[in-house]
Length: 146
Image (tube, rainbow, N blue to C red; front, side):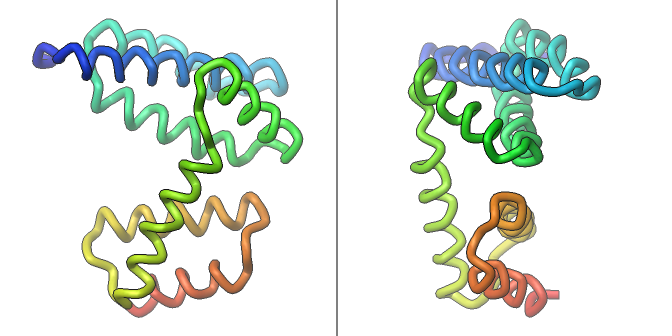
């Protein structure tokens, strides 16, 4: 059973629901993606149940899935997210990059959760044509912690 959300949590849930819907609708408009189609009812179920944690995870997964879009489609999605919902993907990537660079300066991976974030960051850089030196640095950090 999901606990009752505060007004701020409910507002965040609604913003995330709108973002998830927009991503799903956009992806389906540019390519045939049965796996994305199956996520529609999950988005609605999370919203109806007030499952903020589940919605956060779903949006994170949808954001990661959108990396597989062709570059021009990915740029179109980002423009749509910015225009309709005020989502600034550049600012999100910058915040992500700052967390990664903090780990690089520290020289260690602090937790399993951080390891997973670093791995997702490398995947994002590889999918978007990121800086090869940055990819190598993060990969070395990940390898050093194994």
